[in-house]
Image (cartoon, rainbow, N blue to C red; front, side):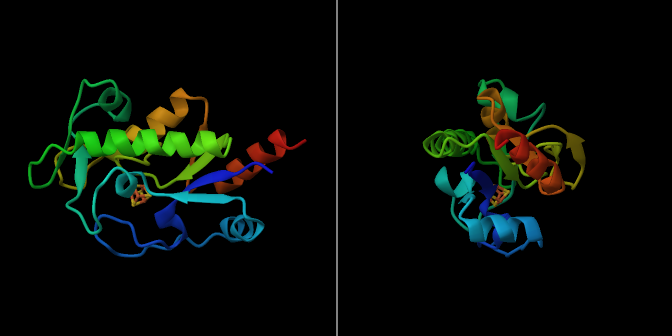
Length: 163
Ligand code: SF4
């Protein structure tokens, strides 16, 4: 059975920066949880950040450039938190390898887990196309990343793996 790495906040774990639970209602995630298919994980907590924590944004470009040391991640208080994000991404990849996971469902918009958009670094709620640091590292290692809006697409991908 192919395991699915999932952002812990999508299945109700209290790991978000603001300490609020945001459960993502999905029958498919509930079924996969029952089957023991899900591997929940929060890269930012694994990287050493607390709950709650000041929100952080990638200053320019996206998670790929952070990963390769060209851009920093700052929190809203002006502290450089890049290393926490990079460590969290590396720990996520280690877990994915341990479970031989070929796909992940990650919360979009996050500087770690975003896959189609992130915030633009101005802390004013402006979105831009791009991916988070963990998503970038997983994709570089041939792990498919789907957002929470693409769960049915992920289910089809699993079927192709399990034929
Ligand atoms: S989006 Fe990712 S990093 Fe943010 S709380 Fe959810 S699992 Fe953690």
